[in-house]
Image (cartoon, rainbow, N blue to C red; front, side):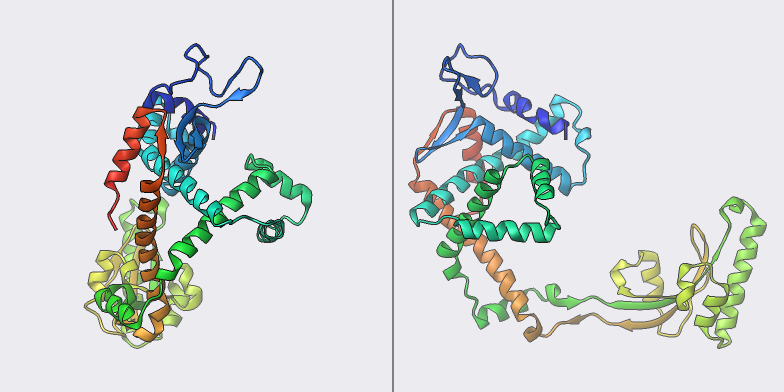
Length: 363
C-alpha cells in the first residue's frame, strides 16, 4: 500500500510537469491561494466539467492496484521510480479514456434527469451491510474508513455507477434482443464453448518411499516390490478398492482409492498418454513419482460431448449480448466524444489520449 502512495509523484515524471495558472506556484498539488482556498490543477475540460490532477492520480492508483491484484504481484516489487514510471505509462492511456468517457456518460445521464434517490441509496447501503455482515453501525463506519471513504463518497460512487448503468440500458439495451437464428449461428460457430470435457474416474494405490530414505536403494526396491504385489493381486481379481484401503499410503485410501471424476485436461501429459490407451478396468504399470510408486485403475471414461442447443440458449444470449453491448457502447461513446468540447490543458496527456482512442476497435 505504501508504495502506491508514490504513484502520484511518479506521474509527473512520466508526463512532465502539469502547467499551472501561476508559474510561480510551489510544486505541490493542490496549491493554496492567498485567501487560503485550494486551487486544483485542471488537466482537461469536457463540456465545461473538469478533470483535475488529483482525480487522475486517484484513478491511476486504482488502476495499478487492480493490475497488481490481477497479476498477484506484491506492490513492494515496484521498488524504483523507473518501475513505477513504466507501470504508469502502461495504465494511464486507458485511465484517461475511461475518465473522460465516464464524465460524458454522467453528463448524458443528467440530461436524462437520472439521479440516485434517498430511498435507493438507503437500499444500497442496506444490501452492502447485509452482504458484508456489517449490521453494526460502528463496524460499517470502520469499514468505510478502511477504504478512505465517507458516506458522501459512497453515495457519489453509487450514483455514478447507477447513472452509467441506466444510460447504458437506455442507449444500448434496446439493441440487445437476440433472435433464435443469431443464437443458433453462434452455437454453430463456437461448438468448443459448449463442449463438456472428457471426464475420467480412476482408482489409485500409492506406496511411499520415505523421504529420509530417498537415496536408499533398498527402500526404493521395497516400495516397488509392494506396489508390484498390489498390482498382481488386483490382476488376480481382488477388489481394487479394498486393496487401496489396505495398502495405499494416499489419502484416497479412505475412499477405496477413488479419484474423480475430473477433466482429462487436468491430468499430466504423461498420465493422459497412458490413460488414453486404456479401457475401463485396466490397471497401469507402476509409475515412479516424487513420493514413491503409484498404480491406477481406469474406472470410467465419459467422452467429450457438445451440450444440446436448448440447454445453453440462455448462455448464448448472454454471450452475444455482452459482445454486442461492447460494440454498441463503443459506437455510442464515439458519438459523445465527437459531439463533446474537450479542452486540454496538458498537451502530453492530449497526445496519450488521442493515441489510445485511435487504437480502439471500430464498431
